[in-house]
Image: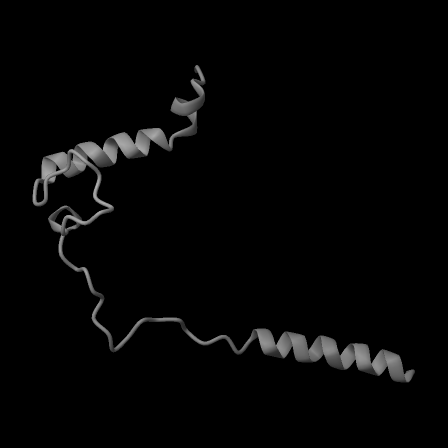
Length: 80
């Protein structure tokens, strides 16, 4: 085999072996902040108007409206 063929073979083998060495990506040792319910969060400057802190039904209504605003079929007005 020529020298360039060996180099290509060596690179291919190294690439295959490198793909086998992936480590698990798990979060351990830290507590995730913000583990309280989302609707109990603090009122900040980013809080949407009309939502009251601690009001779960208001939170659900705002999330439904937000989800419908991101629905392409509703935004475009596609008919079935």
